[in-house]
Length: 576
Ligand SMILES: Cc1cc2nc3c(=O)[nH]c(=O)nc-3n(C[C@H](O)[C@H](O)[C@H](O)COP(=O)(O)OP(=O)(O)OC[C@H]3O[C@@H](n4cnc5c(N)ncnc54)[C@H](O)[C@@H]3O)c2cc1C
Image (cartoon, rainbow, N blue to C red; front, side, top):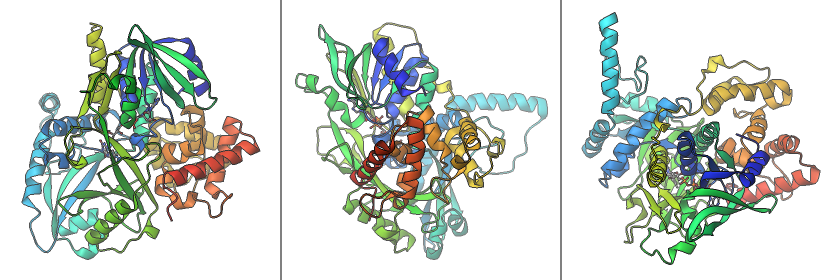
C-alpha cells in the first residue's frame, strides 16, 4: 500500500468519483470493485484497516450450514459459490478445511444433519463452472484418452484448475480421530465429513485493499469521517479528521458509500430522523477462545453441540485451536468489545463436555469478541435467527449504505453497491472482481532461505503474504535481528513489523500484534505485562522495530507501549 502521508496528501488535493467510508472487508471490496471499473476511489478508515468486525470473525469462508435451519437458502447458495471463487482467486489465503460431525456409541450420525449436508452439496455445485470444466475435460480426453478413475475423494482434484468440494460422506471412528485427535479418548464410532474454507480475515482485507490500490484507489487509516459535505441537499464529499495530527480536512467526491458496519447508523444520523422506515443496525456479540494445539489438538474442524440446539466450531487455525462463537444482542460501546465472562464459561463448558477435557480460563492462549452488523427486522427475533443477508439503501443525500452480510459474501456486496452507482449514472461498466486474483500465491519451496529464519516460518509467510513473502525475507536478510521470531517458538518474524510499517500503514504496536500478525489473539499471555509500567519482551521488540521505521524517540516509544497495554486491557485480551 502507499505510504500514509502520501495518501493523506492525495485525499486533500484530489477529487474522487467514489469515497468509501470504512476499511473493513465491505469497504475494501467496494474500493476494489469501483476502482477496477474505472472510478477514482478514496477509502477512509477511522481506526486501523479491519479493526472492526472484520478482524473478529470465525475466519470461515463458508455457506453456513446453520443458516439452512432458517431456510436462508439464497444466502447459503450465494456464499457457497463465493467460497469456491475465493479459493480460486486467493489460494494461498483461502483454503479448504475438512469439518467433522462425530457420532458416538455406534449411533448413526444424525440423519437430519445428513439431509442438511446433502442440500449443502447440491447447492455448492456451480453449474456454469462445471460445464466449462466438463467441456475442457472432454476436449483433453479427445487428445489424451480418458483419465483413470481412482475413487479418490480429495477436497480438490489436482488436475482441475479450481477447487470444488467433494461430497460429504460418513467416515469411520478412526478417521474421525485422525482429523480430531482431541476426541481420541471419547472413541467416536463414525462421523460425517464435509468441507468448508478458512482464511485470516484481516489478511483478506489487506489483500483486497492492496488490489484496490493497484487499480488506483487511495486508502488511508486513522482518518475519521465526521460529517458529510452537503450542497443543495446532496452529499458532495466528507469532512475528515486525521486522528494522528488532529487536523481536519475535506475530501471531495461525487458518490459516498457508507461501509461502516455496526457504525453505519452514526454516519446517517442526520438523515435518520426523516427516514424512519430505514433499517437499523442491531449489533450481536460473538466471543471466541484460542488454545494451544497441544491442549486441544485438531487437524480438521469439529461441529460441537452447545445446548438448546445450538452448535459451535472448534477449528485448527494458524497452529492453534480456535473455538467459537456465541451470538447475543449487544448494547455496550462499539469501540472495544470484550469477551463476556458468561460467554467464555459457556464455550468452555461446551468443549469440555464434547472433548471430555477439563480446560479452564488459565488454559486459554487468547480470547476475543466482535459484533455482527445485523439488520433489525423490527421484531423480537433472537440475533441467531436474524438473516445475514446484506442490505443496501440510498438516503436523501444520495449516500449509499451497505451493511449486514458476511465476510464470505464481500464481493457480492461490493458488486451490488457499485452496480447501483453505475445504474444511477446510466453507465456501462460491468463488474470484474470475479476474475481479479487477490495477491499472488507462491510455493513454500520457492522462497529463498535466509540465515536465522526458522523453517516453520516459511510456510506461515507463504500463507500470509503469497509472493510478497519474498520482501519480508529480504528485510530479514538485510538486518540479521529481523530474522528472529517476535515470540520464540512461533513463526511470525520481526521482519514482518518492517513490512507492516513500510507497506501496510501499520502505525502502532496493536496494528502489528493484533492485525498484521494475529499474536494478540493466539499468544495473549506472552504480550501481557507482569507489573504496571513494564512491557513484555515481544512488545518491546516490536516497539523497537516500529521506532526505527516511524522515527519514534524514547519517550514516544514508551508512550506507545503504554497505549498498547491499555488497548490489550480494553479489548479484554490481557486474560487472567
Ligand atoms: C463473532 C463473529 C463471527 C463471524 N464469523 C464469520 C465467519 O466465519 N464467516 C463470515 O463469512 N462472516 C463472519 N462474520 C461476519 C463478518 O465478520 C462481518 O459481516 C464483516 O466482517 C463485516 O465487515 P464490515 O466491513 O461491514 O464491517 P467492519 O469490519 O466493522 O468495518 C467497518 C469499518 O468502518 C470504520 N468506521 C466506522 N465509522 C467510521 C467513520 N465515521 N469514518 C471512517 N471509518 C469508520 C470502522 O473503524 C471499521 O473498521 C462474523 C462476525 C462476528 C461478529
